[in-house]
Image (cartoon, rainbow, N blue to C red; front, side, top):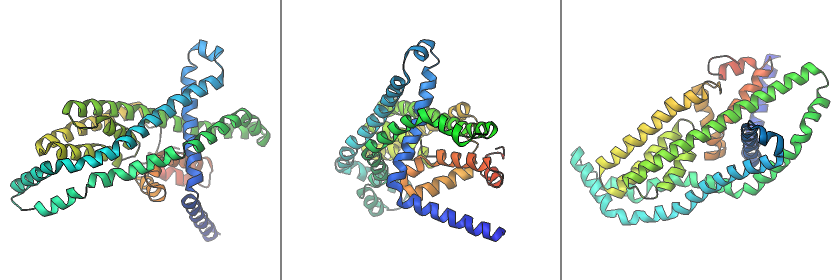
Length: 342
């Protein structure tokens, strides 16, 4: 019997993976719309703390205002990345003298002639190759924005009838309360994560923009927008957000010590924000093991690329909450959780 259950489970998992791979064009816009929907509900609850707004402003106005803020932020970030990326990549040709200077500095520092290898690498514009997948993902999201908006509108339409449908499906009051608590836990975890992550990423991007502007790095708004997006990618996002602008600064100025100083300052900012500010604000609300977060990042990245990495944590949190709800799958949720408390 157990072998049959395991076989059925593996078949189900395999089928889900196939569905995720081939259904990306339909599933990701819906998932993205669902995350935005949760965030809008969180913003709506926040502004409802003001009695005047709660009692006199209709919900559709608050939804429209929250949606405008979110889509304006997304549009600005996407526009900054797309509009500045090509100009930034094309500007590499004017830095050939700086590249030669960097190669000479490395030769002198190491005592080894590495000119040809480094020149070939820098000539291939490795930074552009690393940034392009991110830009393609942002462009893909922007290209699907109408579908996301379409899904979002119907989610709000469905919201008015959802409670009644749940009552009809779960006529037993205890069962209804149980499902209501389950959905409430999912919404709280996701809105808490997305809301605070957006705030933290915005703070990080703003400070990094000021830093890069002060150091004279070209296109600081581009790098700040990139840092804002990269901070949503667990583990490797913050690291790339420091490495990429530092590498560009090295090529722009042709001085390794100056680029290392920028790397140190950006790294310090990211470390303080992600290791002090973020844990203080988020606490242990996500209840996800760091190892599971890393594996989730690799899994969703392999299936959906950069966009999968961005949504890897929210999806995994939803899966853990759902697994914890059913007695047969609760042990799996305990293994995936941070401290075994589900």
